[in-house]
Amino acid sequence: MKISEIKKNAFSMPYFSTIVPKIEYGMRKREYFIISYESDIKILKQFVPEPLEVKSNIVKFEFMNMPDASGFGSFSEAGQLIEVEYKGQKGLYSHSMYLNDFAPISAGREIWGYPKKLASPSLGIDTDTLLGTLKYNSVKVACGTMGYKYQALDTANVAKSMIETPIFLIKIIPHVNGRDVSICQLVRCYLANIKVHEAWTGPANLQLFEHAIAPVTALPVKQVISGTHIIADVTLPGGEVVFDYLKK
Image 1 (spheres, helix red, strand yellow):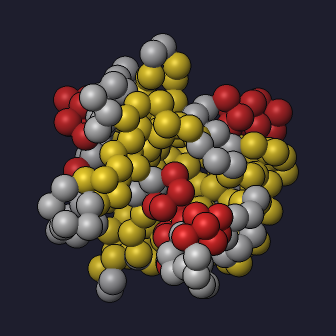
Image 2 (cartoon, helix red, strand yellow):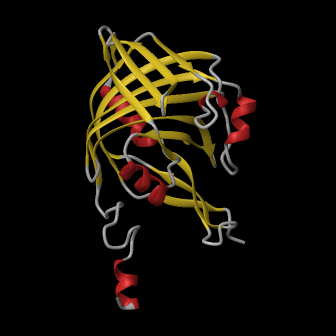
């Protein structure tokens, strides 16, 4: 391979059969179960990086099914997001994510900096209950429940909120010397091409369990505020760097 060829074609690892393709990452019938809860704002400030600011004590725990995702097929996901502001703009900081498929783990980390780890999340219907669970290896670390389709929400308002709310992430790539960091950036992403098919709310609850490697209890639950169940088509386009921690 010529140097010019490598510069032209290199995008992700491995070079000849990349796990992260250059495609439009569209997801059809993406299913969200979001539980909003009050936590300890002093603890949240310990985990949220500057220049983001924590303005509330609200955390969102998400369980998700992606049954039809471009490049990835079908997989499930769970994670925690913290309400933040950046220069007066409200958004969500992605604190932790757990997936059952390596390809979207690799793509999420390499392109945007999503904090993804391999685990076993699930989302389904348990008789009259929407049930989300997260296991790390053989141990259950989270369980969310909500009454199934109790009250419909305005899909237009839900779509507007999804479009307008950015996700903030820290993208970190370590240096090859094994000690330093080559990339450390604050990244902002938006969802696009959003079409909300259904949106519901109902009585909800959330249990988090102690685990050394999946420390979801680091953001403790004081009180559950609400539960939301959404089915939507979305696209995840490229993001933008809003702050470079290594730039002098």
